[in-house]
Length: 239
Image 1 (cartoon, rainbow, N blue to C red):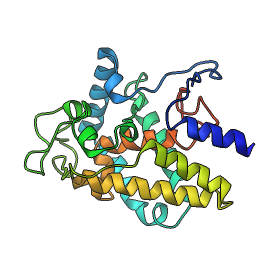
Image 2: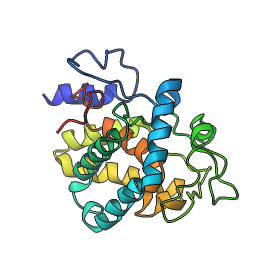
Image 3: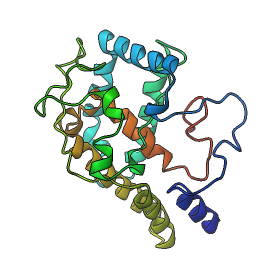
Image 4: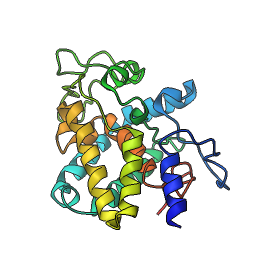
């Protein structure tokens, strides 16, 4: 079992030709990288989030995360469990607006070097900051019902955690005997690295105000389930 787990973990780092949907049965939806959304999928994604921002729901996501911050971060293994539940709940709330809405992700761990991710096509979608502050001239630059305009202060010179580092964390937790707590702490450190690099709202406990929060956390979740090839592709997050 440990060997199989290791193989699966290392496969996530790239180089595996295994069909990730081989064991997916029934009603499934493929969660895509944000850059790979079709025109129709992009329309659903943007319009749903815009409606959530206009209704106050988007602010509710941020407020809930902020209210729970002291309990779900730090030296606690609840970090991954809570955020997985949060992804599921927020997706279901958005599906009440648009049933075809699903969270996509940003596989920045595959283009982790600063010179790569800083020039990623995702910025044409998410928008770059003006003078390291307000995000202007893009789809989500302002949410009327939130506390203010979307803010970022991105450190464009910082490398980010790679898929190999995620896989190594998983493998080390198994081979060292330290188990899930060790893995959770390492992933949380990687997660903090991403948040601080993005800056602005992402560096606060109101970070769900930035759609980057969800693109990042969905991708992080994928690294947690290498033995469950359907875990990010079924119609709802598995529990």
